[in-house]
Length: 239
Image (cartoon, rainbow, N blue to C red; front, side, top):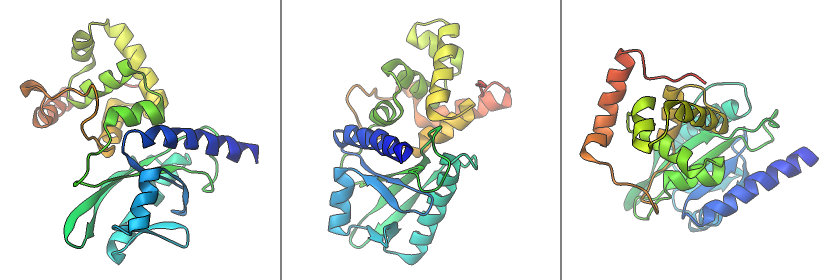
C-alpha cells in the first residue's frame, strides 16, 4: 500500500542519515519484527554479538534478557501506534568476555501509523567499546530538529528552566516557548518531564559540535535542578 511505502521511504531516509553517525539502529514493529536497519545494525547481527534475528524478531541471546527486550519493544511500539504513553527505556545485554551492549528503545511516531505492521519503535544499540552516535545527530536526522531546537532540548535536559535556556541562547522567552512547542510536536511529547524521559532514552556519544558540560551543568547538577524545579511546580512547560 502507498501508506506503507511512504513510511518505509521516510524511515529508510532517516536510517541512511543515521549511518553517518555510527549509530546502530533498528526500526521494529509491534511484533518485534525488524522492518528496517542501518549498516551498523546489519554488521552487529552478522557478528552475532549479543543480538540476533529469530523468526524475523529482534532477539537477545540470553532468554531472560530477550523477554525483557521484547516487553520493552512492545510497550514502546504501543506508544508509537498511538495506544499508550510509555516513553520507552533501556536495558543491558550481556555478552561473553566483553562489556554489555546498552540498548535504548523509543517510540517511533507517525500520524499514518494505525497498526502494528508499521515501524513504531526504534532500537538503538550502543557498544561501550565503540564510539556512540551523539544525541544531537539522532534528533536532527530522525526527528528533524533544527540545531537551535537541539540546543534548547540539551539545555532543558541539563536541568535549565525555559527562561534560563532562553537567556543562554540569547533569545526571548516567547521564541524559546515557540521553539519548545516545535520540539514537542516533532518528538510527540507534551511536557518537559515527558521530553526529558524521551531524551534520556537516546544514546549520547561524543559528536561534532557537542559541548562539554560545565561544572554548573553536570548531569548530577541537572538532576538536582529538576528535583528543585519539580518541588517548585515549574519543571513542566505544557504543549
